[in-house]
Amino acid sequence: MNLAVIGLQWGDEGKGKAINYLAPEYEVVVRYQGGHNAGHTIYHKGEKIILHLLPSGIFSPSTVSVIGNGVVVNPVKLTEEIKGVEKFGVNCNNLVLSSTAPLILPEHQQLDVVFENSRYIEIGTTRRGIGPAYEDLTGRRAVFTGDLFDKDRFYNKIKPLNEYYNKLIRTFNGKEIELESYIDEYIEYGKFLKEFTKNSIYLLNGFLKQGKKILFEGAQGVLLDINFGTFPFVTSSNPTVGGMFTGTGLPHKSLDTITGISKAYTTRVGGGPFPSELKGDTGEYLRKQGNEYGSTTGRPRRVGWLDLVALKYAVMVNGVDDIFLTKLDVLDELEEIEMVTGYQTDGDISTIFEPDHIYLDNVTPVLKKFRGWRSDTSGIKVYKDLPEEAKEYIRFIEEFSEIPVRAVSVGVSSEQTIKNCKE
Ligand code: GDP
Ligand code: IMO
Ligand code: MG
Picture (cartoon, helix red, strand yellow):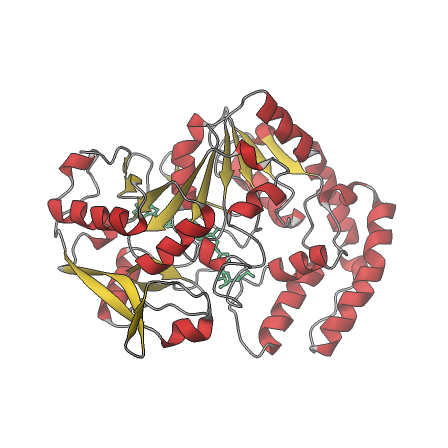
């Protein structure tokens, strides 16, 4: 049975932890969108490792890790990451990089910075060049990993682009990028990446035919989706279900189950609406307790209560089958916990999530209070040992979202996972 694991919130739900935990059951793990804006934290033999481009199955020796055609790839960062994990004794022999993944060029990163500085709304991007690289794909200008292996081909494709980009960069008073400053370097990275690069579309379909078990690894989250998220405070790809197929070339029938990852509360990095945001002491407490600082940029994450209206929307637009609930332990000491069950505007209460930032900025969340459990859950291995108040909290999430919670995470390591949530 093939599985997709996606974030149901604004990213950083604990996808890395969940996928690393699930990966040994799968023969293939494939990233299908995003780029090195992602930061997926994994604990491997007690060491904390943050993956940005490598699939989170890379630590499972029998798993093939595929960077699909929907991922935007910075060859410098990917090379560094491969060399970085090799230091932990991880062998990347089982890594496959799609030959048709769009490249992130230095100009894209520069454009990301100048756009952020000049836009009427600051999105708070990771400034990794993700948006401009995807713009070049839909603008039909993109250059692909497969173009890196022949200097003439690469140069001829990129020369007119470089002129075009520099014109744009000049308009915004940014620093122009000389093509000569990186072309040889990129070709060298290409030489390193060549051995991993394959036609991933045929390869993945071959795995499918052989009946190999495939796990689709989402980056970011549903509320950051370019089509379904809180536009314009979104990323430039589809973490949602459609992205799995455009980003791999696998047919929709290849997917059996979707597990959505949600924190037991909510976080968001960067700008944008956040109806359940906590700005006072409780927010500060959760940020500290949950160590809520961005895995990619180190920025403090904004924190708030779990928003069930948003969660139910995320479940709906993806057909999510079950939930992997993370960071329950972060709530252990709270006397009272709240969840959003509706949005109030002008006396009306709605349970519809309109991904419209002006609307969401103006709603008042309807909050339901829960009694805290005031005890340490981080060592609990089986569901029945969870405090009754925690079970009540989980049951309410199931009731509201109308799907079961399949697993509960109570700490950073794989062992801190309660996998069967039935009494
Ligand atoms: P991802 O982008 O969805 O993979 O999530 P990140 O790795 O960016 O952020 C999740 C953070 O929460 C990481 O620091 C994880 O180590 C940590 N984490 C994951 N699950 C749990 C959990 O159940 N409890 C606690 N305390 N931390 C967790
Ligand atoms: P993972 O996979 C959390 C956010 C940025 C910004 C917006 C657009 O670790 O969950 P971008 O650089 O993508 O153009 O930025 O999206 N963002 C993330 N937030 N987790 C992520 O990835 C994110 N990737 C992008 O902070 O608000
Ligand atoms: Mg992250």
